[in-house]
Every structure is written in C-alpha cells, then in structure tokens.
Amino acid sequence: MPDTQALVNDFLNKLKKRKIEGSQATAKQTAELLRSVISQTRVPYTNQAGALIDSVKAVGERLIAANPVELAVGNIVRRVLQIIREEDLSLTTAAMAGLNLSAVSDDEDDSGRNDHPVLSAAAVAAASRSTLRPPSLRTLIEDVPDSTAIPHTSSSGGDSEGKSKSADKSSRSRKLKHDVIEAVNELIQDISTCHEQIAEQAVEHIHQNEVILTLGSSRTVLEFLCAAKEKKRSFRVFVAEGAPRYQGHLLAKELVTRGLQTTLITDSAVFAMISRVNMVIVGAHAVMANGGVIAPVGLNMVALAAQKHAVPFVVLAGSHKLCPLYPHNPEVLLNELRSPSELLDFGEFSDCLDFGNEIGAPLLHVVNPAFDYVPPKLVSLFITDTFISSYQINYFSTLWSTVTSRYDVGRQ
Image (tube, rainbow, N blue to C red; front, side, top):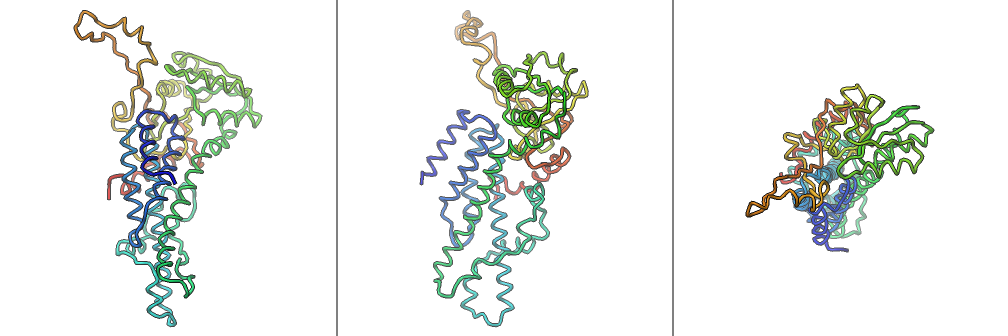
C-alpha cells in the first residue's frame, strides 16, 4: 500500500501548482485520495466514526487551503464527511434494533448481550432522532429512502457462539470502514459518469435546425452536443474562442471531427451573433448555494447578451459542482489570476518598463482573471447528472448549505 502522507503531499503539490485541469478530475482525485486515507486509518473499537472524521478533516483542511478557488475539493470533503456520518448512524440504528430484540428475548443470557457494540450516548440520541432528521441532499436528489430510517440486521446477531469476542470486535471495527469505502466508490463512479448522464438529456433540449452558442472548451458541453447529434438532431454550433487561452479552437475542431456544423467566432462578436442563436449552452466551474455560477471568464458577457435578446442560458454541471458556499465577494474570494504571459510575451512586456526609474517599475499592468460570476437571475436552466430542475437545484443547494453546515471542515 502506498504511503498516505506521500499521496497527500503529491496531491497538495498538484493543487498548488494548478496541474489538475477541470473540476471533474479534481473531484475524482480528491475522492480517491480520501478513500485511501479512510482505508489506512486505524479505528478504535469505540467512536470509530470520530476517528475517520478526524482523519478526513485533517487532510481536507490542507487540501482546501492548497487551492481555495478549486471548490470541488471542499465539495468532495463535505460529501465524504456526510457519508461517514450517515453510515455510522445507519449502523447505530441497526445495533439499537438488535438491542431491542435482545431486550424482549427471555432466552438470551447476559453474556450474549455483552457482544453488542458499545454505543455512546450521542450515538443513541442521534439514532433515536433519525426519524425526525431532515433527509440528506443525496437521498432527496436521488429519491431513495434514507438509510438511517431503515432498520438493519445487527452485524453481531448472526455470529455463531463459537466466535471469540476479539474476533467479533475486529469484525465490527471493519464494518464501518467497509461501508464508507463502498459509498465513496459509488461517489467516484458517479463523478466518472456524470458527462454521460448529462448527455442522455441532450435530445430533450436540442431540437432540429437550432443554433447553439457556447464559449471556450468543456467536455460536458462536447458530450452533450455530440449526444444530440447521435440522435439525428441537425443543428449548428457557434463557438466563441475563449480568449486568452483560446480553448474554443480545440472545441470547434473536435465538433467538426464529429460531424457537427461549427462556426468559430471571437469573444467580442458574441453580441453581434446572439440574435441568430436559439440557445446558449455552457459548462461551469461551480454552482453556488444561491444558484449563481462560477464559470470561465467571458461567460458573464455571454449571459448578459442572452438576457438582452431573450435567449435561454443553459448551464451543464455535475452534482459534484454543487457548492454550499455563497459568493459574497466573487471578484476577490472566488477567482484566481493566471500568468500574464497568456496575454503578452516577455518581449512585449519589457518594452513597457520605465527604465528611467531605478527599480524599473512597469507602466503596464496585466490582469488575467480565470473566472466570471454569473448571477442566478441570468441562468435559465441547470442540467445536471441527477435529473433535477432549475428550481430544485437552487432549493437543494440551499438545503445542502444548511444540512452540511455542521459537517464543515474544521468544525466539531
């Protein structure tokens, strides 16, 4: 098994140096790292969930601090903390069900009762309130029963009398870790397949002979458009090039390779071309709790143009991009400045230095922000991998902010 600390340090370096491209890759690697942390954490017989939570929090705080703008990291840390608490409460409820059965049994002796897990007062109280707890965001979105409300068979109820107490304790110690790791594996699978699940809905939103506008490059948008093409939809795509990185060139080339009619335009031509467009479809870096979108720079201009001409502005975002934070000051807190070399090379910049000054202070300053903030009033529809509506995504994001506030990294 690789050393956990080495894995954490390697991932921290990647985050600090911005070597991971895209929220999906960041979210998936974060979940995989936390799975390794959980797998190698030694848990005591009592307070197993507390040990796992402490380990995840310790690593999560470092990951978030390494690159606060990469909001997918914090989202996954909170999701994993939520998974640990839900699995622990599920096992506690199952243990209480076993204790209730043993209490009404006249044939079970005292030695048999000692094999049940030791339950803390807090765990018992939490389990007794499980029917009153609001369901988690995951259970609400996926429309599945809350695991805490379903009685489970006690893990020790089927043990044979010949097993030793030490073996029974070891088995119960592995039960929570096993369940948590299985749930994290499901989370990783959901992240890996989010593009396909979003693309399945393309035929419902793109119709014959429409003109679609997008900006820059997004794999989610690419798969979404190509899925509609595979369903025999005939439409045209305008791609704004997405300066200064010009990733729209890459998207336009890929769309043409897949047989889509594509027109490449400059970012400054968006307002000139928007009157010909039926729908704007874009990706997102993160969806905030108020329904606002952190998106690649230039998309706020596109959203304003769409609003001006009454063109629907559609955002594609996987559920791992739902963030329980509010954009109080997005220009400062939720942005990063990229290298000036994307706008000017060093030769051009050196011509703008004031060599009459002893320290050569530049007369020209280059600012290259990476993200825009698109307020919720400019977004017409969210399409995500959990098949929920625009209204629901705002509701669930707000609910998630409330439910997970007690799970925030750094809080006990």
